[in-house]
Image (cartoon, rainbow, N blue to C red; front, side):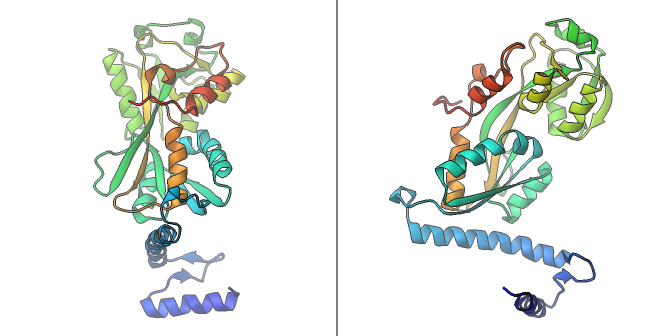
Amino acid sequence: MTQSAASQSVQHLEDFLSVQLIDRTKRPFVLTAEGQKFYDGLSGVLRQFDSLVDEVRMGDTSSGEEVTGHVVVASIYSIGLSYMPTLEEKFQKNCPSASFAYQLAHPHEVYRMVEQGTVDFGMVSYPDQNHPSLLTTLWRHEPMILVASPRHRLSTLGRISPEALSQVGLVAFASNLRIRQEIDKELRNLGVTMRVVVELDNIDSVKHAAIVNSGVAFLPMLTVQSELASGSLKRIQCDRLELTRPLGIIQRREVTLSRAARSFMDIVMKNRVWDQENAKPPEDGKSMEADVAQSELSTPEKSS
């Protein structure tokens, strides 16, 4: 559309709704609160409309027709950075005529985008399986490991017992985060009380604090593979420590996904690992890249 035609369309819409949708006093233009609400609501409606058109035109996915359309997925940062590039590559290879985009956000924002229908589905950790309006599908249990700076005293001890962690400084996640609550639960099960030196609200900050030797940290294995490879962090082996982080997919109930979205979800679900043996992190000295490539994005037939 030309700029004048777009401006006229927006003006007609504002007249129809009797509200201002765009704040024109700012550069670049931004949506007003009413405009954002209307945009979010219509995004879900139009996405469902496109899905319906796709189903009517193409029929069943077994028809052999090429998958087309656009897929938008929201995910938490750690999933987006660790998994999404490889999944996107697989999707583009399998469905070259479809397009794909993903948005990274904090967990509550991922839930909001899924609820409002602005994305096809979301990928989160510790998915809420009792959510009233969302359907949850467990994807995988991601191993978490204990890491520290190579300068930390525990890094020189080799394998340790849980008792060695008592009163050791812990770079912790914020107490309101589910990952922190699960770590605290695991430590209680081991009968260990650690000394929290700092609380942070994201994986990158926790990782950086551990690198500068603020303390030890519990982190998902994939998020620290480059630091382990470079030597800026070292994995600490601890007896009886078996901590994993469940990852899952959330989508709106009773909403049909487009063929393109279903195709991407199918790729995601085929690339999962449920068995505990494959979920264990590799030993130091093994190739992290090779083990991750094998365990994270393989397609076993096993199920939980």
